[in-house]
Amino acid sequence: MAAASAPTVPGVRAVTLDGGGIPLSGLLALPTQPVPRAVVVALHGAGMSAGYFDSRALPGQSLLTLGAELGFAVLALDRPGYGASAAALPEGLDLVGQSAVLRAALACFARRHETGAGFFLLAHSNGGRLALSVAADGLEAEPLGVDVCGLGRHFAVEPERLPGSGAGGPGEWRRHWGALRLYPPDAFRLGQELVRPVPVVEARETRRWPRMYPAVAARVRVPVRFTFAEQEQWWRTDEAALVELLAPLTRAPAEVVRQPDAGHNVSLGWAARAYHLRALAFLEERLLARNAVRPGIPKTLTQT
Image (cartoon, rainbow, N blue to C red; front, side, top):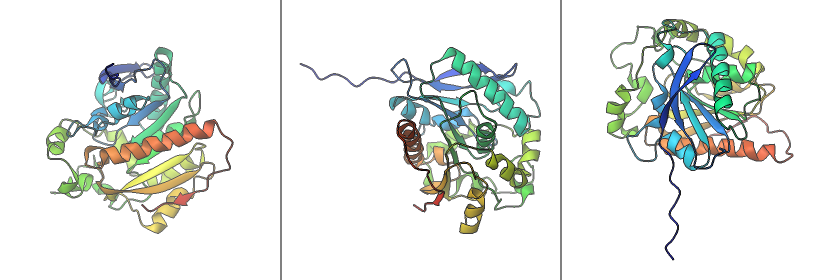
């Protein structure tokens, strides 16, 4: 008898959701089973788009295909002010407005699709502000957890040099990447197709994030995992800064980990699969915790 072939994963497809009258475009990958184990909601950073999580520079780099192979639905969305919503929101939205649109879009998704155990928020850079805000404000059902890569509390540069400020000098783009050896050759060519303008309102509000963060973090009640690339250059990652990052999360178990051999754009680099596997392992732990009585998880600084 011939060995049974491995199940194939359906391809990534484009979707548009109703975010309370604002269209949110994105990419969706579904597992082979009719009910996914959970839904991973992936939110890109400033000046990027949903395709950030579907890199094809190297087989195995796409979060969407990896997540679907492991039984999850993966929904990568163009945040409000990007993609299909850019025409309706030419200057973008502040964090409160983005959160409202995203919550409405996820409610729309839940009406159309099975969601399994619920939503898990995975975000890169400025998308992490939105993920934490949504977790703080709540969904119809609390998210399983939040995984944020490339977002801190204290800037490592002057605010005037942040993306969208218009003040970046020659070579400033290297802060997004770190050493070029950390990326497959095609990553830079394909990455250019993902770049989008940073909405004015978002760029202006990002400068205030260090002051906004404590109030947002204090309302988060679900586990949070922060990842910083080895060559992170936008955010401070020294011990004191990390302690201050975790301190306001008084109601949420939280941890910080390092991703070796990576720059800020982790999901476009050689380390993409390693990072995605670790993030999905964090989700696996959240699913395990739902089915077991466990003591509270302390805040830890894990240097790996």
